[in-house]
Image (cartoon, rainbow, N blue to C red):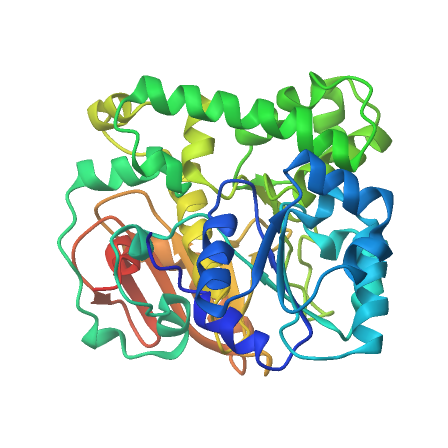
Length: 411
């Protein structure tokens, strides 16, 4: 079992919080993680993917919870929403820390009737697919924090071959994919993965008339990963009403299949674009839906910019999940189309800008958006970084840096 970098946060939360929930897409390793913790801590483990357990939990949630003695790990709790009120009642009777360790493949923060029932009683942590460092078995080192205010001159970067980076892009981070070396077997896994989500999780969460519309929408969103969300254009492309489209899009968000990156707009005096950007947060799933292959990418002269940007955002989300500085990601774009791909902001309002380039070289023009942000937000701006596929950390002026994407290898 590969070590997951959020594990210390889970263990720490269990020491003082009655309910700890690990959220994340299916097949990211939640079950493996909680089973390992349950074995270490001597807690009972039950999964609602087991039909008998699901039937008991759904039929009488209060009785099901009342019949549990001691500490429990409950897997896939979103399948029986009634459990949350039963857990709330049990916690109100006995607020013993660490009693309930839960996992869910749906984002409870987007299901208000569930999240509100355990407000103040539950800590939510997100387990994304494996990071590059986790795949390599490297110890936790938070690159998001290092990029924000660390000493970039002391970065120790491992040499990364282009072919190795392409392999990371097409494989993504789902643990099962790491073991599949054959492109055909990877394709089969992703096809089955999408079908399993459609016929299990989608049916659990919503009544969808035409299940075929969801994979079609997912493919359209894949072609727009890294772009502004334009619901009107998507409605025309899908033939769906905007009301239905919003419902389906929210469902895909809830299942962690798409990610909405909100626009940064702290300065009311600036003319900024307010629309979010959309991403498929796993580059492996993205390349599958786009029909991109490892061999095809290797033979090309360059790499698709939206693919590399998607991969970078995915890596950042994995590091933000165990960050102690509470950094929040945004994107930045003016109505004059000056943009910064990703902005990280801390609670004090300080921020850094990150531009993603899929090329091996960096030029001063690549810092245009970062310089604009630096000039217009001088009190907030910490530094600007261009992440590129070359090998060296390079200074491009005060507070402006070019940093290789291999930084996420956490050497």
